[in-house]
Amino acid sequence: IEKAQIKTILENLGFKVSLAGSTYTTAVPSWRKEDVQIPEDIIEEVARIYGYHNLPSEIMVGALPKQMGIHTFEFETKVKNTLKGLGAIEVYTLSLVPKSFVGKDALRVKNPLGSDTEYLRTSLVPSLIEAANNNKRESKFSLFEMSNVYLPKQNELPEESLHLAGITKGYSYREAKGFVEALLDSLKIQAEFEIKGDSIEVSHRNTVIGFIEKLPGASYAYELSMEALFYNHKEYDSYQAPSKYPAQVED
Image (cartoon, rainbow, N blue to C red; front, side, top):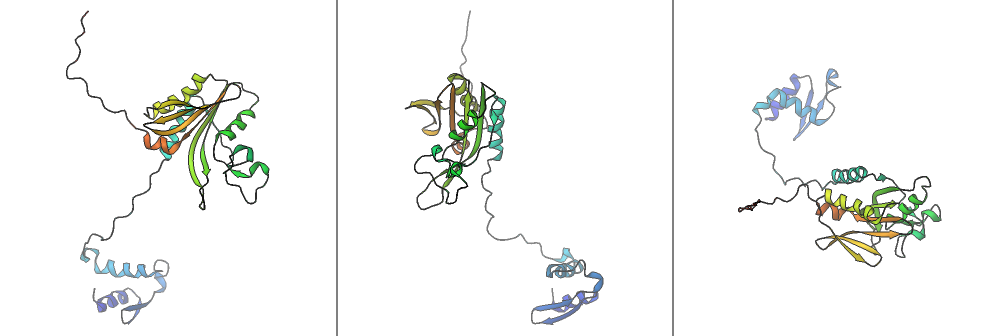
């Protein structure tokens, strides 16, 4: 749009305009002070009088915007609802734990509030054991928690890994294992269970998902990696085509 035409449009709208080089200086009329407050408002005044239909229609150029990251909120909700449907109760415990809850490589807080909140946890199981032991009323129940653990890395910030852990009290081993199997079935994950020392390793196609372990008394605990569950789960079962030559069954 020609400079003179821009100046004329604005002056006809009551603006006072002065031009120095390619810079327009405008004084907004008193009756427009509420809706003309930034430079883009003045550009809009010129465009609407000049006519939007007279402006060229060009597709914006530039690099494609980055894709949004993978969000796992719906997946996490599905896992929680599955366990709740099996009768488990969700709990939340503190990320800061005493020294007895962690191994020797765990990260220690510089200014802990007390000895019971001194370290960043590397596993959810000890906190769930404490929560289960604090329940003196029920003899048979199942708890679970989905939260971060903090795995130390040398000279770097810790790796925050989302884990799912659960504890059963008063259940048999078959029943406790059933919580894990039912969850994996709902996620279409065909897992393998292998005895490794005092615990049972849960894996899928050579990828370790987590473990199940026996605790003192009639209690069992499991801990699974949410990342491993997310990247190995399926929304639907794999399609299997029917046989071209169905069996002929005769009595």
